Length: 62
Image (tube, rainbow, N blue to C red):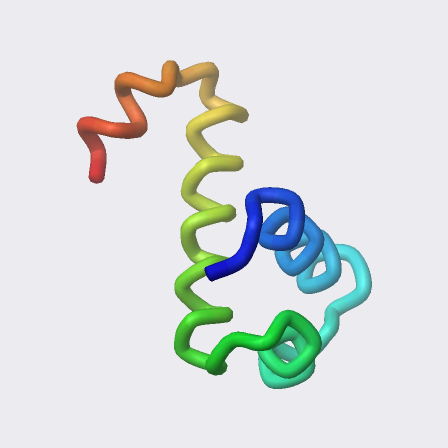
């Protein structure tokens, strides 16, 4: 389990620096599968924020 800040850093490194997912997993102490899950979560949240959705909408979306 990583903090929200650490998850944000993982996502930003992937988006901005094109860091490979394997390296992100190693750096953040999680498995590669978990790194992909955290990355996907972040992308989903970013999409909802960009569309102006509320936290309630995000929770219902699962």
